[in-house]
Image (cartoon, rainbow, N blue to C red; front, side):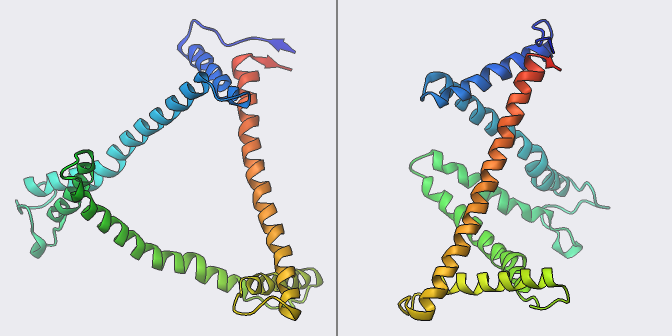
Length: 234
């Protein structure tokens, strides 16, 4: 085992030392809330916000709004100068002014007296998003789940058939658990208890997956400290 910590005379080494210090600041929360943890937390939030602002500026706003508007108003990208709106020529880029104005209205929330103007933009965003998600979620989630639930109980293989039976019993009993029009007694009570059993298995698997993902993040940080920072190599 050798010990070769990151050097402090190179930009890369300085970055590694800063990363290690911030990692320990985050780990300090295991003891209690303290200024070092708050410093690292605020740095993370601020840098992430700045990064995504610049990212959206060059990947969303500029190519989808500013650049098309510039070409529309200056006649670039077409055979002749078409002006602001030229739907008759198949050019709808000028109409991007309206979503651009709605986007600017969102910033009126920073000003008290005209903050109510942002509600128009929020109403459009929520309405459009709800409309798109209604059809998108129905096709991508609901319909796909229904199709996945409609499977034959006998598939010609004992293993897959047993899996299909277990799945079908879990599906039916889990749905019956949420049937509140009757008191859960008798057969309905037994079925709902079986559904609770399946639900607990599902929640436990989800929680286990979450723990595993967080554990992988911890392992990544420990590898960074041991290998990149301290340079411990076996």
